[in-house]
Image 1: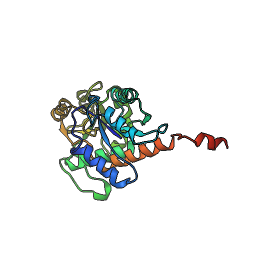
Image 2 (image 1 turned 90 degrees about the vertical axis):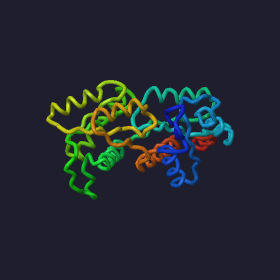
Image 3 (image 1 turned 135 degrees about the horizontal axis):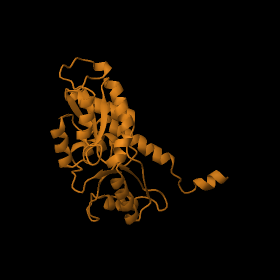
Image 4 (image 1 turned 45 degrees about the vertical axis):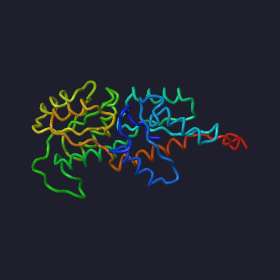
Length: 252
């Protein structure tokens, strides 16, 4: 179950629908659903209702859902919402950590920058861009924890681009303005922002702030690496589950 930040986000279109569609195609034996975090309990597409619906189709006593927050970086407030919703729904569901792999996220950010003409493409598709930026700000949401966790992603992106890369937060410190100042102190003249977000977790004001701060690549969105990370996260959660009867088998 992809838990999507935003009570009003459209689950039938955009990156959420695209990611869910890829997961269904690649994992035909798994039921894939998307649900809104923060929606009313009676919203059929809300996380609460979707959890209850999934539980009704599965045997009692077994975990009925793996809930994966659709996030590229940790977001403590959203993760807390997910846990509280599972508790209020009274279902046997587990929630994973946020989707993340520094290497795969860095690759996706690189590609989005290249698509916007702000960075060179990867080595396989290398070409010259005279308008490429010479300093990158990796912008996160989720406060200081998200920014701190994204530092490893920034280091890997810097290695891919051979450019200075600074991590900043759209909703805390260090801000995008702080990051821009640091890059300019390093001698970077043309700055670009790489939004380290899938999309729904950022508000319109967040997106407007990014666009006003410097040239900006598109959010990660439905990049294939996100679907890959979601599948990996699901597999890891399943491998750590204990189902009825397993404990007895282990004892025997």
